[in-house]
Length: 511
Ligand SMILES: Cc1cc2nc3c(=O)[nH]c(=O)nc-3n(C[C@H](O)[C@H](O)[C@H](O)COP(=O)(O)OP(=O)(O)OC[C@H]3O[C@@H](n4cnc5c(N)ncnc54)[C@H](O)[C@@H]3O)c2cc1C
Image 1: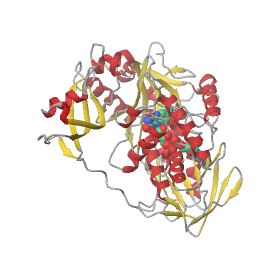
Image 2 (image 1 turned 60 degrees about the vertical axis):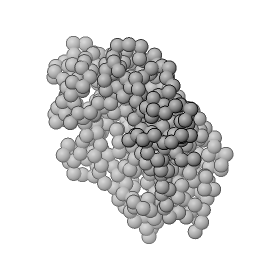
Image 3 (image 1 turned 120 degrees about the vertical axis):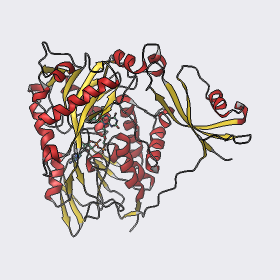
């Protein structure tokens, strides 16, 4: 049976539609002659306000002559990437970090008959949830177990957006695994799938159960403190003051690994600075976003709460959380960090996203740690006792004036009024202001009644751990493998998971 890909199947969004009827209309063939094999992608085009349009990509077969259409092409399966296997002489590689990269690396390894041991400085998910709740309630931070650190990694308190797509087979394999471990079926084809924090955490529980059943071991509150490199090889690693000699070490550290990066550098691992982005969270009523994006009408009832993605020359929105909340996501004492999360239902009254501007050595200088220092400086400048965060209305920020009263924010444990122009370096404030002006042109009224909570500094890793493109190990150290966001080669839940998976898949028992 020959399969074809049909692109640009576009029609006005409505609650009741028949894909068979729409396909038949587009191709001018009776529906009975078309077999829909698979929905490849379902996107929503909201560029024309008041007229949202579905945009589907399908795989089809035909029981009649294939109709001529520029949008119809024979389906070509992705070529399998062939890479040399990485032999593991013992069955228990060490994986440092239980975020998406570490967990998916382990998942791929167990499929090859290995039983990796996983270590994380933070707690198991449920214990970690208690720590996060306590932090949001009282502002008492556990620096090892928080929104960024602990089982499940940084995505465990998130919107659970799974937005990374592309032609890399590893991405597809990650989606296959997500479905296998309980992600809803539409995750496979929605253009902007999301699981919510509840969905992500349920998945992490299932992954852990599976990995334990396969013989993996999980070590919580176990920190990689040091390592010894001899003759191009990690000979020992120090974890919680004890030395171990694993045959292979995977670093799946995430982007909050400041102390560990320093230790790696000290031991001769090659690192380089990496540009990233920073700014603040913007928050508005979700109803208002619905109207701005969809127009007036019953759209949210069947399309769900609206989301947006805005770009300008000097900045962009990032990690939008419809129906969500702005959260305290600090990982160090004395430094405030904001981020956003929502649950699968996205039922909250508020919408938020990061508004950020790209930063590079022109902003922070040439040193290896200059980007980290800029992050830390903004986080400290924003700090008040008990991790209160500075807030300002977007109107006041753009006008360079003070608010007459503190605007509200969903950020817990609480906020204080501030002039964010005084926290960011002038050139960064100026770029963020320009970006907001542009966003107001694209979505008129976007910044009206919006509240800014600062600072959003941990958008992606400011450091890259250099690795060999083909062998995936650290430059000059053959058994040390950096993966995921903290290695600087991935960003986001799916791409970090795929980076871990890509390595794990290649590791086979043998010499
Ligand atoms: C609040 C929030 C919301 C987000 N929302 C989304 C979203 O909706 N969609 C999306 O795609 N991405 C989102 N992200 C980003 C996403 O979570 C990360 O890109 C992803 O988790 C990176 O995966 P990772 O496995 O590489 O690293 P991480 O998930 O950061 O995991 C690294 C782990 O390593 C551990 N670790 C670090 N150093 C050591 C050490 N020395 N010893 C032992 N353990 C150590 C840490 O405790 C941590 O658990 C969000 C991030 C945050 C913070």
